[in-house]
Image 1 (cartoon, helix red, strand yellow):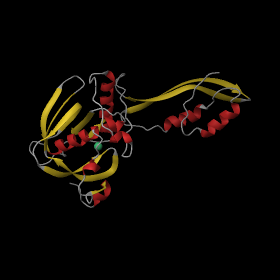
Image 2: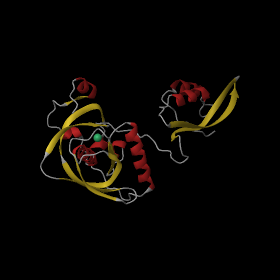
Image 3: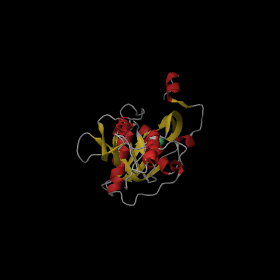
Image 4: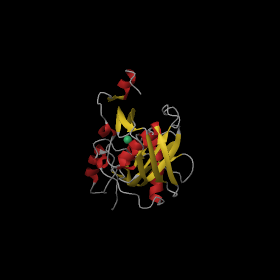
Length: 261
Ligand code: NI
């Protein structure tokens, strides 16, 4: 009897049970345990988990079993039958994908790139964060998403809140010699924050999935976010830009000490 089961990490006792029965069937699992596995799946606001199970019921020795042929789960947004965006896993510092030079995106309009961009925006907003680069979700491609929420701007009058945007195959040019220290965090370096020197003014360029070209100057926090995300595409983390390790610490400790810039 050919069947397949994707074991979760909680099913070792079941696996032992199955081994006793393996002369009868390939795999057996009770539906109750599958249900528990489904309940442990992370719940997100505005999302629901849909579980798909193909199973066949049979009886043996007075017991009733469900033989699971296949099972998989998906996270769906609550609205829209096709808007099934996903929260992606974020690579953490130490994973080699964060240290490699990323490859240009051959076709920014390709369906898989659109899907990746949608999922990255969903992941960034969920985290929450102000930027996310493709290598942070294990895709070594030259693209990132970012935003500048209100309240994060610097005093520079040109540094204003920016809606969520994507830059594919971007270029960044530093303007002038002025550098400023500012606090940065990174979704790949959770719980930590550091003061990092960055150019105060830049010019950047990139395209989106529809081929629209963005070419503009940016200052302040806007410029900082773009420089931080662009660095990810060359395998550079903010820790590699730091010049004063005294201004590096756990976010809650820094907040307690009033060190937030
Ligand atoms: Ni980062």
